[in-house]
Amino acid sequence: QVQLVESGGGVVQPGRSLRLSCVASGFTFSPYSIYAFHWVRQAPGKGLEWVAVISYDGNQKYYADSVKGRFTLSRDSSRTTLYLQMNSLRVEDTAVYYCARGPSLYDYFDFWGQGTLVTVSS
Amino acid sequence: EVVLTQSPGTLSLSPGETATLSCRTSEIVSSSYIAWHQQRSGQAPRLVIYDASSRATGIPDRFSGSGSGTDFSLTISGLEAEDSAVYYCHFYGSSPITFGQGTRLEVK
Image (tube, rainbow over all chains, first blue to last red; front, side, top):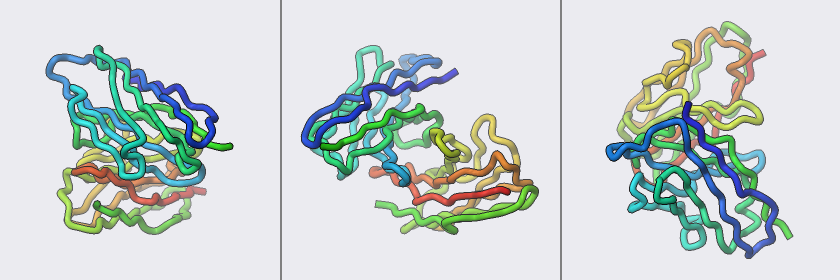
């Protein structure tokens, strides 16, 4: 079955960096598959906030204004691992970060990972 | 940016009753770009409805979605205790992708 497993969360001081990973498995990446992958975060006790998306080929990337210029998406050549490089972290970036799959770039999220917690604190 | 406003904030119902959750968008959107996700306490979200009215795989037919224009709704009939969760509507037609603030459904 489809699985998305996030890792890399932890406690970090404001201004520092952290890299999250999301490993996707349980489905086939064919030359015709156009899955997109998103990061969505949830601050403690709050709702869902979309962070960023990367297209199936890695050529299209879009970011929320709140993270633009600080966060960078990438994926490995096999397209099975997604990365979120987070720089200049702020206290307000504290959240559980979820990886989610979409059938295409502007599409619903059909599978979610279990999330990884990022805490930004001095 | 398309802003989603959900109502009510909290809904408390008894088993067997019907819940109707509302999601209003700040501008007219295609129904092809509205989804609903369920998030039980301590768990990751799970897709329930996509394209406004299509049930996701494994979702019982007690769940139904409808709407068009700026008004969308999620209806859950024959409520069960396991339906207790926060439900988020989700717009995915353009960037930035947005979510509503959530409706907490309590079934007891």
